[in-house]
Each structure stands twice: as C-alpha cells, then as structure tokens.
Length: 589
Image (tube, rainbow, N blue to C red; front, side, top):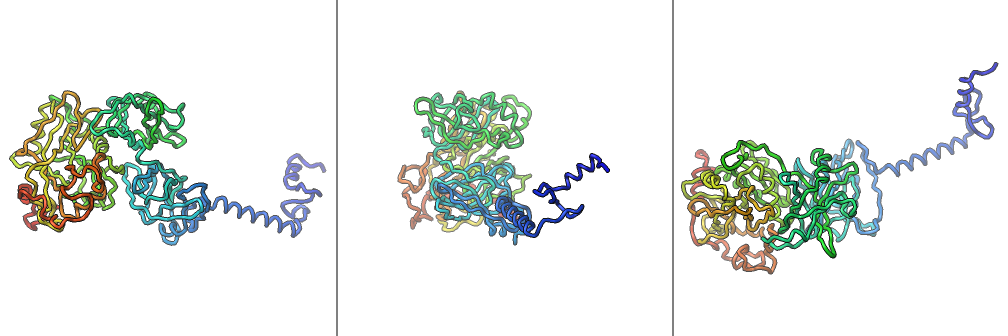
C-alpha cells in the first residue's frame, strides 16, 4: 500500500544517513542500536565537549557558585591583574554558597604621588575594604596582593578606592572587578573634573599641568577646550574657545552640539552613549607643538535650585549664610565646628573631603539632618584647595547669598553685641560689596600637652597679639568669572568691592598651633596648591609655617608654651554661656 506524504516525511526524519542506511536514534521500527564501540566514542566526544565548555565559561560568574576558576595569564607588560579568587569569594559570603559578588567596573585610574586612585563606574556596589584586594602582576606572572588603603562612597556619586602605589607604569584593577585593567593617568598632567554652567553656556574645567601663576590671569587665547568621547581622534572632537584661564581653572564656551548631546544622553547622572564611553572635556595648547592634556573630566551640570522672592536689590536665595571647607582627617573636631556655627547662624555646610580615612562619615551620620544641612563631597585631588573652593563656590551659588571659606580649626566670633545675621543684613543692603574680610587671631597650645576633652573653643585660650591674614565671606554672584582665589579670598567682578569688617564686630579665632599631637599632622601634606609642604626646603620663612620650626616634624621642648602673648577667653566664655547643659555641665559635642 502506498504511503502518504506525511508518513514518508516521518520515515525520513527517523532514519539515519549511514553508509548502510540503517543507523537510527533508537531501536524501534526494526533498526539496530549502534555497536558498543560507537557508543563509547560518542560518550567520549560528549565528555570532551563538556570539559571544553567548563574551561571557556568557567570564569563566568554564576550566582550561588562556591568556586570561581581563575584564568592565569602572563601580561606582555607589567599589569595589575583583575582576577577573583576562591578565598575572596569565601570571605564575602562564608563558604561561598549563595554568594553574590558585587558588580564593580573601573571608570578611571589616576597615579597620585603616594597611591593609585580608582574611580568606579556609577552603580558599582562596593563591599568593605577587607573583602577585596589590589592585585599587581608583572611580566613574569608574579602576583602582588595589597589591601586597599581606604574606600569611599556616596549615594550620589562614584565610589573611590585608594590602592597603595604599585610598580610604575602599570594597568590597574581590583580582585573583584568585572572590567579590563586600566592604565593610570599621571596626576601632574590631567584634566580631573568639569562643571557645566547653564547661566552663560560655559564649561568650567579644572586641570593640572598648565603651570599658571597663582593669583594671575593667564592668556586664554593660548588654549582651547576639546570635547569628545575619544580625545585622541581629532576628527571626532569638538573645540571651543577658552574665555578665561587662571591657576588650575579654565572657563570655555560649551558648544551647541555638546549641549544637545548632553541633554539627549541625560539619564540620571550618566552622559554615556550606547557604547559606554562618556563625553570628556580637556584643554589643548595652541600653536606649534600643541598638545591635549589627558582627561577623566565628564562635564557635570551644576545643581538647580528654586529661587525665592525678589528683594529690592536681588533675588533672595534659600540660605543667607553657608560655609565651604576642605579637610582631611579632622573628624574628631567636626561636630564642635558644625554645632557652634549652626548656633551663630550658618545654615548650610559644604564639606570637601580630601581623602579622609578617620571615620568622617560616621560623625556626620550622628548629626540630625533636619537640624544640620551638611553635604559631604569627595575631593580626592591632592594639593588643589583653590580649585576645590572655586568648585564649591559654583555649587553654592544658586542656594547661598553669602559663603564663608574657613577651615575646620577656624571659628567666627562676634566680640561685640552684633550677630552674624546683623553683619550680613548690613552688607546685603550694599549691592557693590561682594566680599567681607575678617581678621584672624592665631591661638597656641596654651600650655596643654594633650587634646582638650571639651573642644578647642574652650581648651585654647592664649594667642599671638597681632592678627594674621584675613579670611573671607563672599557673595558667589560677585565672583570674577575666572574664579581666582588665594588664601581663602576671591577676585571679584569689575565694579565689585570688598569691605574690611572691624575686629570689634567680627573676627576669626584660628586654633592654628594646637597640641603637638594635632599640629604634627600638618606635616603629612598641605592641601593648598601654592603652599609648600612643611618638609620642603622652600619658603621656610612663610607665614604658612610655624615660626622657627624648620622642616622636620620634631616637637620642640617648649612647644606647649609657644605662641602665647595674650590670654583671650572671650570665645570660651561665650561657649560656656550658650552651650553648657545646666544639668550635666556638658557641652553638646
């Protein structure tokens, strides 16, 4: 009987294609199974296939896996390997069962003078520093493992990892990184951050390596700004003129194409396109031998705030008085400084954290956010205080009418009957005044050999007789577009003036020369760009140094009694009156 078409098709699918035409997938329908030797060969081939798959895909992370194979390789040049280990996986989650390792990708790496800074991509989930390592591999496959020096992360920014300085000219990564190793850029030749100013469609670029003189305007026509996702390819970049150049700060025109691009790609905090590359900006010198600085600077929009009602002279801002400071490892003094200044009328704080590793975040977490409006901003850039202050002035401009630039050991003081708000109201009615300059009294150890338990304002009561250089409170709207600032005061716009506030009205108690345990920390490095470190044999007679101390962190025998010419307890008396708990006698810090 003839078979139907469907039956013939099923017969072909079930039949084999062997030489005899009789092989099949089963023994049904009269077909014989393959001989034992053939079955063994098929099983061996299948086993080899499984082993090959394990080798190829063994390094791929699987949730719940307790073992992660490591592919060892000898890099052609010295590198920092980006491989995980079973031991690290176990540390992250006990025996490894159910472990979910974080997704960590490195965005940039920068070789600073004493360590390597790794900047992770936004969204990278960073574990505690004890749960991963900085791994260094050299050409002969020898691995060096070092724990990170510190880890810092904020909810609204990238995580930072500080690794020890490794072999020179290496690529960098982490033991848990899921991105290729990154070659560090050198800190002394680098564009490191940038801000977009929508008021005048300009981009403010912060750069190391142009060696412009402190306090002086450079010649902007010698430079141009370069925008692009790959600055090494001239045909894919957009250039624009530089409007001002001063110190480490350049202001240039933001090209319309760049503005459109950044608007289109604005998805939260990222300006990356589909291939993952960010838009960068750099500075290029013009003329013969022109060169473009390496850059990690992704233009970041300035925060926007809703302005309040307009007064007679200007539109009112959210806060009449804010403070900017830059600090490193000053956590133990932070509560006193914030609580005191809140009491006298400061409403907002911008804390620029310059690589602290002493638990500053724990201290700030104890401060009630409804009472203290404090923002911590990670600023890992060494010896760049002036650039940091310019950066802060821009961030504070929309929300603060006045901004004080003072250090963590400096306290505004009002010896007369006026208050901070009285002083600000007096000068707010004078639209041509853009800066208030305040004298500083420098206090010494006051006979102490240990840190005063009740704080610096009550612990140090002896100072030098003559005031030293001033600090300033400025109107951000009054600043020169170049943002030049030296020793905590800025250059102002043409037509704006500064006012010297009398010492009987307002001054600063500067607890500059504290007990040796505190003072010696200044030897570890100064944050100011144009101030020499204590160890340097440069400008030894400068007022930025302790007179007669030299360049060695060795305590003089008479240190506790130095810098004591006038006993001054006025601020101590004020603090005891305003802050002491009548029940316990304690101060709030």
